Length: 369
Image (cartoon, rainbow, N blue to C red; front, side, top):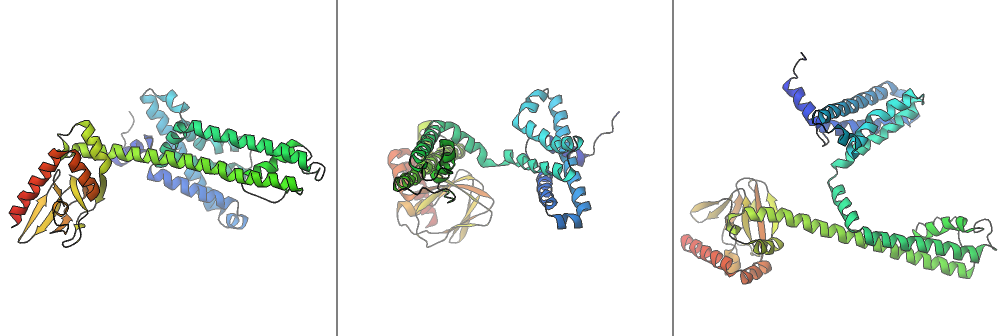
């Protein structure tokens, strides 16, 4: 029988078997990439080549171990084929096998170890924004492809035009349409190396139009991506706020349409313990709902604790807009913030909420006298 793993080792193996990057994996990637860069600096490598080789072999051993653990884990779950064909499985396999295969095939060691730069691919799945970028590219694929077609059309037409106008003056540079493509791409991307320049008046006019078209094409791409990212960000924020709003008892009686209306108006605020939220005497321009955590209201002669589902700050919005008490978080808290303008719109749309808030404000006013 195999010896059972110690709790610490079992925990490490379980974390390694998961799809997410562990701290050890981040350290291994960082050390491996930095050491690979050291290989290309001959004086530094000669001075510390033993340490560099030891670090690279240690990083490779970790990635091979990680790959084998995941293979075993997926085999037990009967998902080995899915894992091997997935992007994360291919990245893990490349990270574990690229350097050893190159060494076995007789590639010079310093050259073979350059393949360890592929370890940076293991970080890609852990980047939060990439999933959002993929959704944006899929949703906006039509407009993006349309702009790409425009880009290719301008490149081709500009190449033909410059070939026609410049071939007799600069046969070495514009002697064929494929030769003129380099100039067209460089000019349309506004890089402007200056190695190829039209000299005829009409050629320069075409070049000016191509440069202006390049600004327009890349402006369109930027606008499409920025709009897509903004829409995805609003969508993610809406879903997160919806989930938080639906858990607040004060909004529990609202229907889906009303909760959606409220969600569009509220913004979330996460605060650590002992953080001042409201200062007495300050101008009030918003009210707060407690989604989680606890706050303390410092009233004259007493302190009142408010927990999940309670709200505060409405007194300054209903009457005098000067804050009447200090409010501080007791524990780590998540608050939903409703600004003054949105407060008035919400009260107009949902009179039942307005009545509830107004009744609570009057009750608190009587208690504070």
